[in-house]
Amino acid sequence: DAGVIQSPRHEVTEMGQEVTLRCKPISGHNSLFWYRQTMMRGLELLIYFNNNVPIDDSGMPEDRFSAKMPNASFSTLKIQPSEPRDSAVYFCASSSRGPNYGYTFGSGTRLTVV
Amino acid sequence: AQRVTQPEKLLSVFKGAPVELKCNYSYSGSPELFWYVQYSRQRLQLLLRHISRESIKGFTADLNKGETSFHLKKPFAQEEDSAMYYCALAPITGFQKLVFGTGTRLLVSP
Image 1 (cartoon, rainbow over the protein chains, first blue to last red):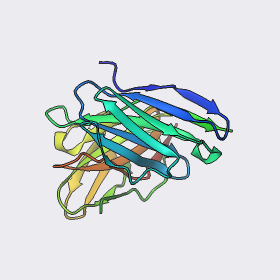
Image 2: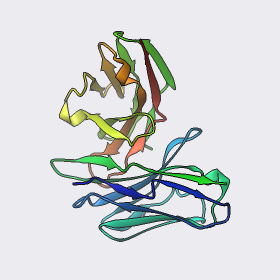
Image 3: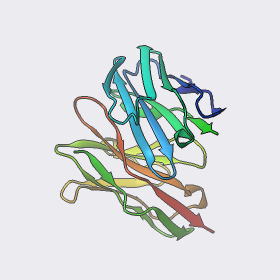
Image 4: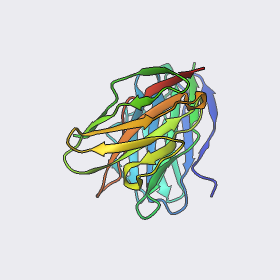
């Protein structure tokens, strides 16, 4: 298994542009999480899905942020319009219950909004 | 409410010294507890979880329900242990929301 795959690895965009981050979870995992990591705030849970359904989006900072999970193998996090304060590393993670219970993280997308 | 507290932002030790990274939690119930490690500019990796009672890279962690703590320990630190360490908890049942502490940076000097 290739693990949790995120794309792109790096994204530099201008303020006001739309940004879409992508995540492919581990096959068979039924939960997916989006986290944001900054020096000031550490790791923040933005939203998580269970069986493709959004369960808790209370961590989504503003209406500019939206996330979807159209199927079990794909999720997107969109920021529209982007702002410099959105600059951070965005991690996706997936998990499942069962004997191999655990959370696996992707390599992250480093977003820079200029 | 679920909360994980890591009181130290930075822990600096010399190679060969013992290490203890502190983690306290609050949760109304029995959570699952984890330690994650993040080496420079890399992804978070699971270091260990309390239900496995395992030792990874010489690290161990004991769950103390009375003190609601899950401190991470290693008897002899190595330079390659330098990294960010995050304590996290998740409910044993129900939805698997993983909540992290703010992290402790461990710096091991030669």
